[in-house]
Amino acid sequence: MRSVWTKKTKEKSEEEKEVNSNKGQIHEYLPFFFGKLTGRLIVKAKIDADLCIGCALCVQTCPEVFKMEGDKAVVSVSVVPADVEGTCRQAADECPVTAIIIE
Ligand code: SF4
Image 1 (tube, helix red, strand yellow):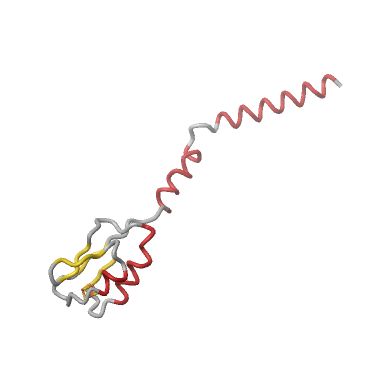
Image 2 (tube, helix red, strand yellow):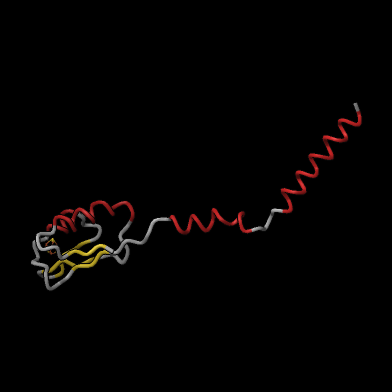
């Protein structure tokens, strides 16, 4: 009875050794790298000022990203916030002269 317990304990400690020997190896860091790779890409918006006719439709659709400056629309943020990405894309789709570029 005692020898069975000792044998199981020995097996367990060898398993632990194997687990511990894997610490610090590359597969430990894979979730970190994959998280970086699969994370949300930065979305930016631009307006081609030559095409813009100043209808202000984009400002009505997505005021968080677009604003009027004189008779032309401009982008007011350097990076499109994740929560308004959909409306920003909608504004680009609805622009009558396709002056909005999303990248
Ligand atoms: S919807 Fe297009 S044309 Fe109208 S203001 Fe915006 S960028 Fe200019």
